[in-house]
Amino acid sequence: MANKAQLILEGKTYEFPITEGTEGEKGIEIGDLLEKTGAVTLDFGYKNTGATKSAITFLDGDKGILRYRGYSIEELAAKSTFLEVAYLLIFGELPMKDHLQKFSDDIRQHTMVHEDIKKILDGFPSTSHPMGVLASLFCAQTAFYPEAMDPNRSAEGVYLSIVRALAKMPTFAAWAYKNAMGHPVNYPDNKLDYCSRFLKMLYALPAEDYHVDPVVADALDKLLILHADHEQNCSTSTVRIVGSSKASIYSSISAGINALWGPLHGGANQEVILMLEEIRKDGGDTEKWINKAKDKNSGFRLMGFGHRVYKNFDPRAKIIKKAADDVLKKLGVNDPVLEIASKLEEVALRDSYFIERKLYPNVDFYSGIIYRALGIPVDMFTVMFAMGRLPGWIAQWKEMRENKEPIGRPRQIYVGQKLRSYVPIEKR
Ligand code: MLT
Image (cartoon, rainbow, N blue to C red):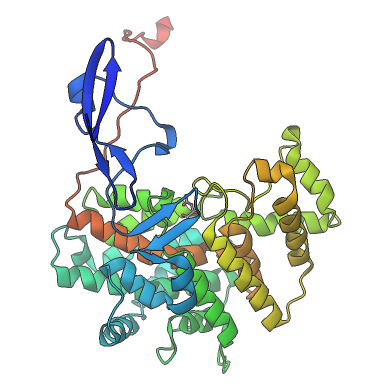
């Protein structure tokens, strides 16, 4: 019975094939389970359910491994650039020099957005969260590029949509921030590289001869690499299931942006800093807040610790922690909130309560610290996560389309009322 799983249900035995991945992961193929047995599986949050076969990202939660197309996150973060990693994720191989140059030039050609986007932007009050503005502006591209909605679009057409998505995301992100500040927007300076172009749009004031700090640009490039993909997380699964209905790349990714916004997902980095600020305002007594976290009745949860997938440590967190230390040193940042973070980190890494529960600092704990040190406003932290995750969302949407995967349609176990007759309102 090699490569088969047996299920015994109501005295009958059923067999299902087992598929094995490149790294030895096993999946029980139950595509005909309902047809064969009359039963469905039930797996809240799909934590035990594989939704696809993917060649993009491999992660091992027990060993703390993360690889994009087989390359370790450690190597890519140390040696690559965000646009090169985006190319790798989307097209499957590290680019030759001329291919990367063309990819970068193609993106550079599309950083401008239609002036009518400003009319949409102007409709958002300055109190709008930048993630809501970003999701709307990103989806609005379907209005300006309706050809992208063709589900059978040519490979060249899909490439153009991909380039436009990568090119305009930083512009939308910076404009969402300027809208929140009530400041005029900046147009992209195409003489600059990807991250510098974004930072100048984000920070430059009208008529200012703004110069981007290369330390900040390099740190941002590394952060975007570390966030570029993470297999079938909540927002990526959202992009895939929306895309499975043959919705456009822009609609699918706009849905992903909305999924990422949640505080249990991409919004966690914003929650970390808000938590640290609360501890600072309360006097900075980390011991008191650590004890609150241990007290089930306190209702307080330490944000930025532990992970659904990684059981021992988040490999990205290790890299970001080093980057955070480097950036704070280079920028000479002395922020009381950051000192509180260091104390929390120190306790979490040695306190048995946290060790037993695998509550170690994760990628969101440190990314919030770096973004703050880079001067990025807290409401923009999740927008930065979205900018980083964009190539992963694109790669996963493209893979799902190329594999001609079926529309996603999960089943359920119904627990509602049995059949009953309508009662006229006068008789209720
Ligand atoms: C991510 O990078 O998407 C987050 O760590 C969440 C996850 O993978 O579930």
